[in-house]
Length: 226
Ligand SMILES: [Zn+2]
Image (cartoon, rainbow, N blue to C red; front, side):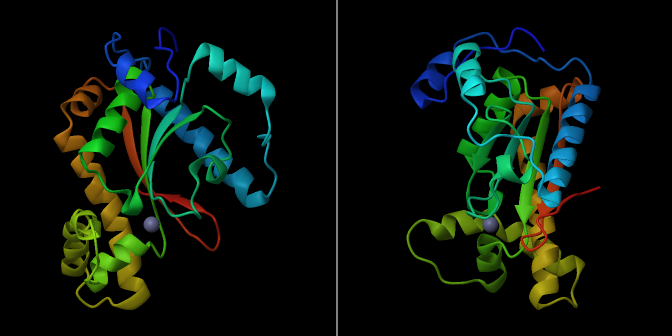
């Protein structure tokens, strides 16, 4: 893991740093597999209630401030207040490059952010993280009338819901929601990996792994999709 650009979380600095040379820090898929294992182990710690990540870590804060961010993974997750990735995966400050948006959808800003995490920060793994009882997915399932810009966001989930209904014509209620949440994760992965030339290139050169996962709100368990 070397030659990663040093950036600050400030969006202006982030944009300025886009002029820096891009880096692919991962040298083989094994880097992604190492990251994936760290996330799985972290979720197990979270489930056991025994975290090894201090909430206040001055040394870590100062280290990341001076040496930049070196995330082990980019996580595209839902904005839902109950699914904070650093806590769910029991990860240190600076370990995850997190993109959060209702319904973990892939609009152009989310795709660009994922490209930044992979191409400029060298994160070898992208996780699209859905969760049970997602309100955004439920709005798409129920075709709920919504105000403001929300219909445009839900439109990005509708193809996944239609696919889930087609694949499971007998399902309704909680079972349909479960299928729709999972299909939405798969759909957003397809969107990410087909609309982004940057991610396509990283995948083709075996420098990136993209995986889907669903977190159960009640148990806290993250189930990685096959
Ligand atoms: Zn949600």
